[in-house]
Length: 413
Image 1: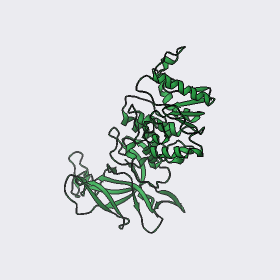
Image 2 (image 1 turned 135 degrees about the vertical axis):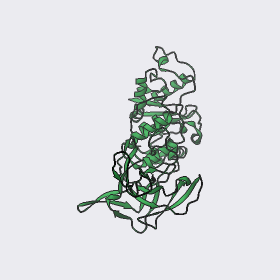
Image 3 (image 1 turned 45 degrees about the horizontal axis):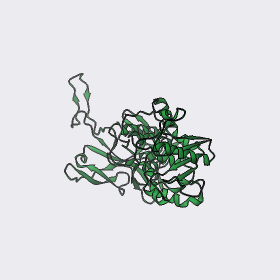
Image 4 (image 1 turned 135 degrees about the horizontal axis):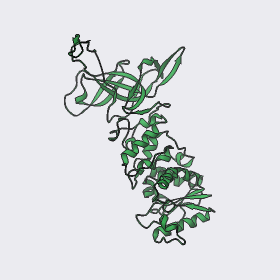
């Protein structure tokens, strides 16, 4: 049997792998005393082997460090019990302000194991129960943990299922947590979303998080798109957020099933239902942002409010609403698109491209003599409007309706 320890590293004085592999160990100081207290508690749980991340990983080996970080959630999940030493807490109420609830790695330490035992700063048990996570008698500590972490009690109390689902909700749990190394914001979430990343300290926090999001997107859960604010600077796609903070305070939307998402050199390719919007004729001039109300061409009664830069609100741009929570259904021999009364999607825009000038009259080029005709309307690719997240549109009267498949387009966001 194994026991995995959950203890915050000290700023200095933690026993290292090199110190502990000697016989007898040469480690000393407060970190070593903490380790001995941990082992004493492990013995009382009749555990034969204990594991401590501070001294059970050879951090001089990049291969071992990489494997350990990627395996950590599984080790917590398979442990007999996890011991949590809350170094800043004396009572259960103190947990509200304990830094353990605000650190990046402790999110998976809370959710992964089936059994947890909390000890206060004096190594006294916080409750009289054997397992503080799955016993009805620990209701108070679960209430405090829910308040301190923002994680619903049932996710803590019942078995948490890792995977690339409910991405917006789970990212919000991590949004205010801190890590010593910026890349660990992403690496500490691998187990939560059941994805694997190559560890590359030095790549930077945003690049690491972009790789995490790309890995999550392979599963196609649309909740990964429910964020707002500026997109990542180090990525070609405007659909990649900068950090877990991008998922804070987003709307709770009914987003439906899996979407086909493919990352390409042009951005994130995905099929969406394109509903063209009418741009109001009277627009305010200026360089700032304006909150503009668009009308849907298919359903004029629908009003969609979008933040648009005044410099982009003119006839050179076309606007649309790209619905993502649609379904494809069979109607006899054909396939049609089912639209929900509450539809979620992105506001999109594309730029009109004038290839041959404004005149529609035929003209002859001076190169090979071909007679060419200017297209009446040639538009560039659809782009997600920056800073705008998913929005919800309510279609009146009917719970759902059906439209032709021609409204479904692949876009690169």
